[in-house]
Each structure stands twice: as structure tokens, then as C-alpha cells.
Amino acid sequence: MIKRICTIAAVFASLIVVTAPSQAVPEDVTGRYPPVETAQGLFLDCNKIDDNSKSFCVGYITGVFEVATNNPIDGISSCLRKLRNSNSIVKTTLAWIAAHPEKGQEPASTAIAEALADAYPCKH
Image (cartoon, rainbow, N blue to C red; front, side, top):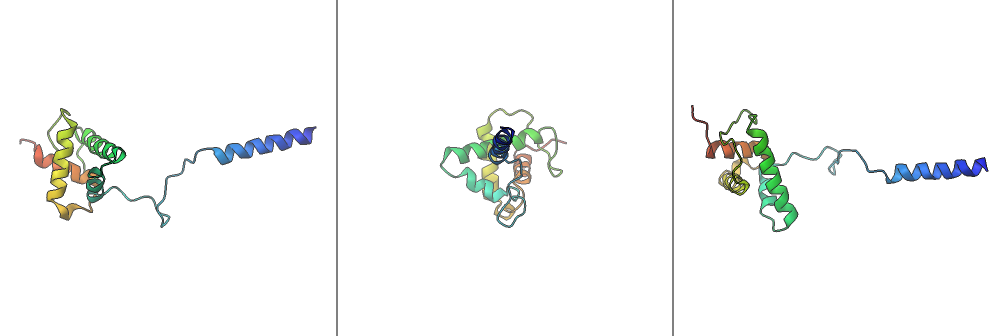
């Protein structure tokens, strides 16, 4: 009887381990951490027609905007302090990335900060 209880407990414990969600950071095919989102990659995602890509795009850009309102990103500041319309910030960012293809491989957060700083410069 005790042996049967131990066997059932062992099976149950192994099921918990096998079915538990992984907490590991996803890796790319080379075994390294996934790359940082680039300006070009973000631009491509934002121009896809599916809802998931569009949601990712708006969330990424507005998230960086929210951080940048209180903290410079890579030393770059913009002076648009309140998010009045996320659509205008997304359009401004995508237009800037399209106009600066040479910045395509820089981190998307830096490109967003540069786009917003160009569009909404701080008055000194």
C-alpha cells in the first residue's frame, strides 16, 4: 500500500514538473537571448495587417513614449509630456523611421525617442 502511494505521488510530482510553465527567457536559434527590437523590425510589424502586430506596434511605441516622458532614452528627450493621442505618436514614429532608413538596425526604443524628440523638441 505504501509503495503504491509513493508511486502515485511520484507520478503526480512528475506531471507537475512536466506541465509547469517554463520561466526561462526564450532563446533564438543560435542559443542566445532574442535580439532587441530594431527600428526596421518595428516598422515591418507596424505595417502588417493582423491585429496582433498592430497591437504590438501601438503598445511598443506608446510604452516607450510613457517611459520617455520622464526619462531620457539614450540621452534623447522629447517635450510632449501628455499622451493626447496614441495614433499621432505611432504615425509620427513610423514616418520618422521611414524617412531614416539608415537607422533601421538601431534599437527601436532609440528610434522612437529620436522621432519624438524631432517632432516635439524641448525649448531651451
